[in-house]
Length: 416
Image (cartoon, rainbow, N blue to C red; front, side):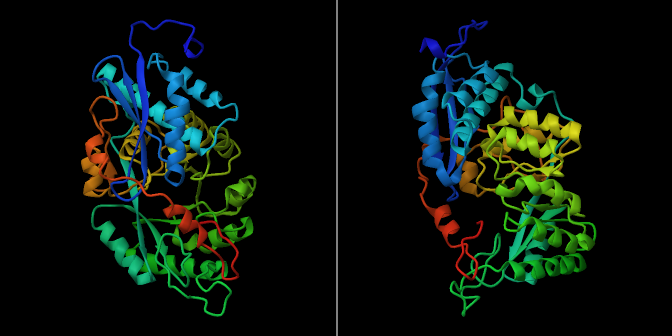
């Protein structure tokens, strides 16, 4: 293993002794966490490596390819270890390798905080705000059902809510659809873009009438529009003053985002499907987004996102990290540490974890009146009970089946 060791000596004899992936699904969603152990008994770190759709591949990458590179390394060499893992497969990046890298990266920051006796946010330079404002998802099969759900969430103290409404067919994103919505079409359970472009402004017109002007409203397109359609929708939503309109086009068309953003009267939030630090940086530098919305582990972890944060700060872009149920509680803690240490913070997506998740992950962040507060415990402040985690084995195939049934009425596959 000499070739993987740094050409310098650490100031002490501490070293990495084990690296392994732990996969658990206490809420039915496969979560991947990397545990890095050290030669100091009891000193270990946890990092989020959750790529729900390919969790087996991430776990195998960690255990079989990444772990052997790190045994014997000093855990303080975070930047060098990041670069080593990034370059190790020769072909760089991608969601599998980047999630494996993120799990190691976040675990090393967890160890750094524990060694210093400090929460990680203090290692990042300390807070510029007390907590991170969050939003949750409201949805329903009908407009009135969606607004009832939104009012339930707002009653808990939230100030931001994402609205999604169902429709004919089963392809509607983020809300229940109606089976057989297009009975005369080749695919009766399809999703129709033209109906969507008409129905969505009606949802927000009604939302403003019912919810009032004080609440901030958000909406996720989920990458299903052409650049021209994205501008049409954004202009139709202008009277309703959305906080942001999310993922309006597929990643294949991100080169068109600067013109989409220029033509949009509402803020554009994009980045969830990016799996490259460089591609995310290009979105910021090309003025393609108002809010950068990446899945932190899929671009390589908090070290990568700290670089993106710096770019956002100097380019007038805000952050809106991806944070639904397929981010582990460790990943949420990392998101919040980034949120409270940058002036570029915009909003944090939230998720209310089931009791089973909080039992498996002691210290799981819980929002209070819509705010997520960072833990003051050393490191991330989140642990993992492996005995309990083993009770919730993950199931393969759920997301693949979901993707296969999102089609247009003519039968053509659509972005899920």
